[in-house]
Amino acid sequence: MSIADITIIGRTSLSDELAQILAKSGLNVSVTDLTENYSTKASTSELVLEFLPDDLELKGKVLSNCDTSCQEKTILATTTAKPWITRLAHCTKRPDRFIGINFVKNPVQGKLLAQVTKGLQTTAQTVNICVESLQKAGIVPVKLEESPGLIIDRVIASIVNEAALMYSSKLATIEDIDKMVKLCANWPFGPFEFADAVGIDKVVETLNMLQQHFGPKYQPCLLLRRMLDAGWLGKKTGRGFYTYT
Amino acid sequence: MEIKKIAVLGAGVMGHGIAQVCSQAGYEVSLRDIKDEFVEAGIARIKRFLSGSVERQKMTQVEADTVLKRIKGATDLREAVWDADVVIEAIVEDIDIKKQVFKEVDELCRGETIFASNTSAQSITEMAMATKRPEKFIGMHWFNPPQLMQGIEVVVHERVSDETVRTITELCRKLGKVPGICKDSTGFIVNRLLQIWYNEGLNMYDEGIAEPSDVDTAYREGCGFRMGPFELRDMVGLDTGLAITMTHYREYMRDQFKPPRCLIMKVKAGELGRKTGRGFYNYEAKT
Image 1 (cartoon, one colour):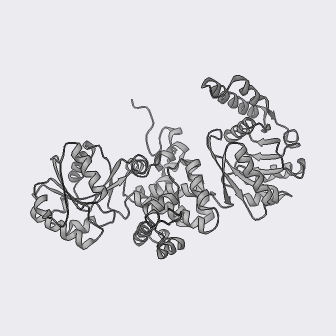
Image 2 (cartoon, rainbow over the protein chains, first blue to last red):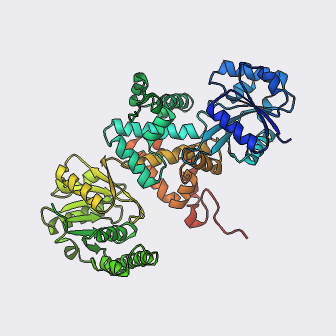
Image 3 (cartoon, chains in turn yellow, purple):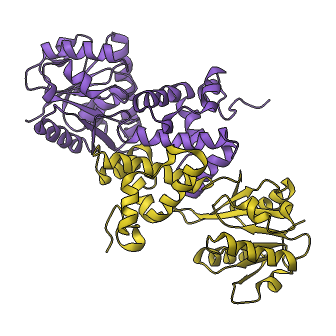
């Protein structure tokens, strides 16, 4: 099976951008949201992607409705980075044709990466169909198994946590830490620049999730939790590790 | 303090490059190693680098000749360091040998001479305390290749004086480099964060979450890193990498630094990366 028709449920800047890329590559893409009759719209598609807020119950309900209205061959996909794929698949009667596809925007050149994530019951065929379709549309796919924070959120949260510990232990300043990894390890951004861009709330959320699955080595450092308490969430609030005007 | 002469101990991968950078910035340099052939090899590498720069028109032949002329090779320690204002040590990463050399240099140098160690793995404080001048002892951690990498970690400790820190950070700038100050601690800034960066990726493989090529692609395409953790491990060498990770694990005693199983097994199997033709990836020519 190849995918020709895609429905995206949920309007975000990322889902808009994705829709444009997919449409440009010749796919038939429609974007809808919960104010519309999304399950009818989705009924003609081979792939349905939900871009809803991270609310397990809401996602479960929407995907279950799509499951009822969609054709049998249709693949249903969640874009969450949370380890919810198998659980959400369980809300449908097609866990074999259920998958996670999380999109990340490259912070340097702006291209999209897709983390194609297999749940326990997702078949290899479902994975391959998604990978091939993404490749055709010029989106780089990587394959992985369901896990907290997937690859991207997990590595960023971990380096931010270590850097925050280093800074709060007064071993080096925020500026020097960022400067050195950029100059000496060729990182595109320093850990604090990553943190402020991603959001301190998201970093702490990812660490909490990792801690729950893998144990105390992911415990968010005290400074990150205090920043969360203070509402210093990064660029979006004007203050994180740096101040923005 | 005005710096005129810099002595570089060790003419290897780091030492020769450090000597070249110092000379290019106009300092008189002595480059010392324990055997003539090591000194000659270091100077030959500098010559090669400089003729490359002349070919690419980054430098004139006259300039290249001047840079080379300012560097005096030596095997005699006294001859190399007696009139130096700063001694930069870039010898083998062995704390006992380093301490021994610094003890000798301590006797040979003037009292005001500053000692800097380029170590990436040993304690600056411990080396400083092996001399009679801990206030004039500092870490100056360069990156490979020294001619091209812009950052230098300036490593400070309990006993170092503010003046030494000021003099060395200024020296970094005069050498065209950017200093970043870090207190003495294993891995300083960059290597410590790199261990976490490597371990997260390698752990995902150990946990069965993703294959090396998928992790590498995600690091590159999703975060903007130039290479992924498996590619970089293969490039640097898995044995070297495991030793550095072990040092962090031993010193910090935290699970974040625990060497991943896949790294240990590769080293045991002798698959050490590009240099052996095989590591996490296969580099052997396909037949």
